[in-house]
Image (tube, rainbow, N blue to C red; front, side, top):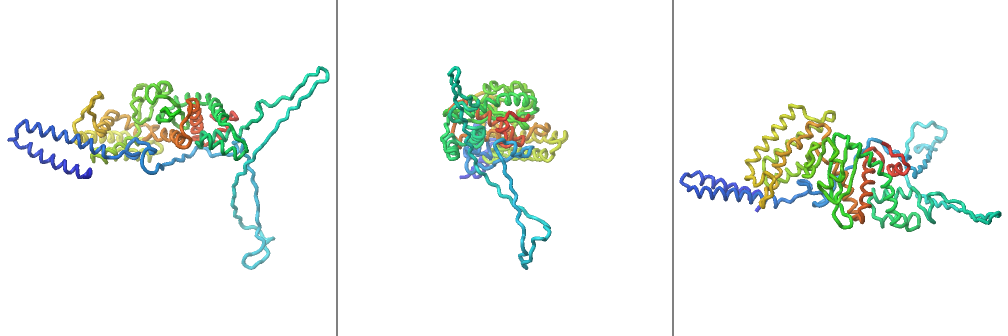
Length: 473
């Protein structure tokens, strides 16, 4: 038995029952029983088909990491600035040019040494040679012949112990741990092979914490800047700290990305972070209920999430309204996307979109069973996924369609989701965090690296600029 055959069988029984109900000789109590049974079976089949349809990342909000098959979809965005490697202080580039002259003709063997060059072809070979620099400072001790006091020379301020590690090593450690997502053990092993010393993991973590502390002022400036933006993309994802569940909250737009870690996902976390309560523009999100608690902002709902849910409803129940709504939103998004200057619909186009949107929702009522709960109260019985989606589309119409008449609002919330992707990469490659302080430091550094990448800087350039105190505005 398949979903399609089950639908056909039920439609056949429903039609036969309707014919029996049209017979005026049928008693009233029998009519009521038949009507109740049809409604009951309609709801049961609806729930059964939704449970039977597997949710994946393509038809629901399920992340690819929890789905089946390949994750794929790696996005490599381009910055607004070309990378300039000489801005990284610990990189020295040695360039050599070798010219090879044609001495004799390959055909007849004639001497070509005095002939004029008519063209040239060049090929480039790039290689890296690691240079380990051991700099030893010797402080002499001298004895005063007058008073007999012994005096030792003063070591540089950055050499407080027997062995010190230079800025270049610290930059690489931060890059390996916070950008390349390597574990402490693998980073330790890498440097052991380079410098023939086993570096302390505690020292490596200390470098990360100090670098995070140096970015506090940068973070404060970015918070002030993002509060002035017309739109903010918001999202959250889970992470683990010492095996406990925590949440990473992302706020981003333009070339700014900010991430904060918190023990909660909902209202308490949003209030503690303090960005949305002070904001007065538009926030783009995936319809998480906690965001709607704030009336000081306008809300735009991610269209990609809506399309995936509509696809699931179409696959599980074959509702015509779900397919029509999906195609309507995709068509409107396509029209907006093809207008890079305006990025909005005209007023007439928007009015037609809104009218068709409402018509499809109205038609959807005739396809679905009677709603159990439309007011939000908690009941033992629940509406189906299709009914809940219909209710959201009906209630938040302006938020769903905001992309069509506000040019700063994207159709999707993919920006925020991309900014959070490194959280899952970190857990897969290096495991969870051991302390809240390290998690906080990691996401502050990640915010900085992401923001600098949107400006066109590589991770090594970004870290080097921060170490030198030359972070561009």
